[in-house]
Length: 214
Image (cartoon, rainbow, N blue to C red):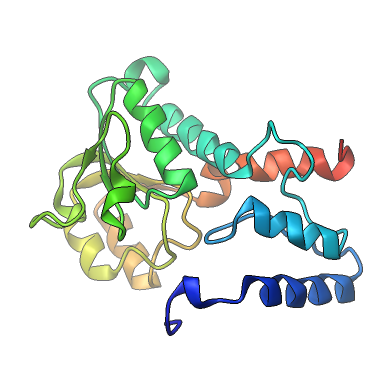
């Protein structure tokens, strides 16, 4: 755990160190916006090196929103199309730029969306029900799909043995805390769509930017 939390990080120093690393790799690696980084961070980093893909210079594109729409597309597909979203129940864990957008869009499609975030007020998403801080843990809410958009390792073995959901589809990288946790979900017949598929929206935008920066 980082003492003082994310807010204690010197973002300027972090971006400069990242720039040095990327320059040393000479174009074999690029980076973009992700959890706890902002478009301003990416803009500053892009001034230090050329190996940034985050819609720099195009204010009409937000990589976080792109990621969210990838999640929405995966959810629609899993539910059998946009027309079948109405009446379905989702629990969105993590209501940052990605989770909040995905939650609001699914609510617009008629789904009942429960939202939860470690920062309670962030889960106040239009059209959704904020369950942060309630007595019932988020994984105990009966739902069709849990949508992880927060930290890695969210699903422990204990949670996977008791979670009341049919599927896990979201944007979180490496959502299972262990092989045991994944096995527990699999044994219970919970459908899991790998985040490399469901959160590919920003990667698609990045690939376009890589070949046509304008």
